[in-house]
Image: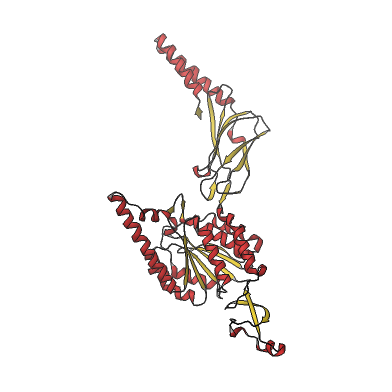
Length: 430
C-alpha cells in the first residue's frame, strides 16, 4: 500500500479542524473518516496482480546511439486500473522518462515507451516494474512489483570505421590495381617477365629461360588467405582510463578496424580475449558475419583486476593457430608486466608466427613531459620523461625479439595498426 499527497493534504485540513475544536472526539472523528476513506479507496482500486507485462523493442544498439524499449501492460482483471508505473533501468542505460500515469480499462492494454541513450558498453538489464494502482478518490494505492526481463546489449561504437575507406584504397593498390609486384618469403607467384638489371637472381626461372631463349624471372605478389589472430588482453592494465574511456575500449576499436581491413584483403581473422581465463572467442566466422560476431563478443567484456597469465595466453594462441599466422597482441607496454610476463613466452610465439603488438598510449604522459613552470610541473615533467624512457626501452627489447610494436593514442592507434598490417602485407612478411 502507498499513500498519496492528497491524503496528506486532507490530514492537514483535519488537523486544522482538530485545532479549532480542541476535542478528543474531533481527533477520533477525523481519523475515522480518513481511515474509512482510505479503506474504501483501496477496496475500489484495481488489482496490480491482474496486470500482465511484456516488452518489445531494440535488443542491441551501438554506444552513443539511442534505443527504444516498449513496455506493454494488459489489464486482465474486472476493475479499471488507474496507475502510476515506474520502469526501472540502471543509470548507465540512460533511460529518459521512467515514470508515467496509465489508465487501463478491463480487458485493454497500454504501452509505455522508454527512450535509452546508454553511456557504457555491455549488457543493460531492465529492473523491476513498480505499479501503483489508485482508487477513484486518489487517497491510497495498491503497489506491486513485476518482473519484465529485457536486455539491451550496447555494442562497441567502432568509431575508427571512418578510416576504412582510405585503408581499403591502399589495399587495392597492394592487390595489383597499381601492379605492386615483389619477391619475398611468404608471397604468391604472379607471372613471368623478362629479367632487368637489379632483379634478384634467385627469382630467375631457369626452365622458362631455357624455353624462351632469354633470362626470365618470376614476379610475386602479397599472399591472400592468410590468417590473423587478434589477442585482446583483458587484464589489469586494460582497466586504466585514457581520456573518457578504458584502454580496453580503445583496443577494441583498433581490433575492429584491423579485422574489417584484413577480411577485405581475403585473410581469415580469429579473435580471443584473455587474462587468466578465456573471456571470449570468435573463430571460423564467415566474411560477411565477422564484424557482427566480433562486436557481439566484445560488448560484454570488462577488464579484470588481475595480471594476465601470458603462459596460458601463449598456450591458447599456439593451440588455436598451429600454423604460421599474424598474431596481434593488444596489450599495454607497462615495463614490469612485459618483462616478467610477456618476454619469457615470446620465443615460443615468434618461432612460428609473426607477432605485432599494439598498445594504447596516454597523451597525458607527453603533456606531462612537456610541462614547465613551477616546481610541481617540473616534477610531473620528470615523471613523464621517465615513463617515456621506460616504454622506449621496452619497445627496443621487443624489437630485438622480432616483435613489431605499434603505439598511439586512442584516436591514432586504429589507423596506425592498420598501416602496420598493410606494411607487412606489402613486404611479404605475413
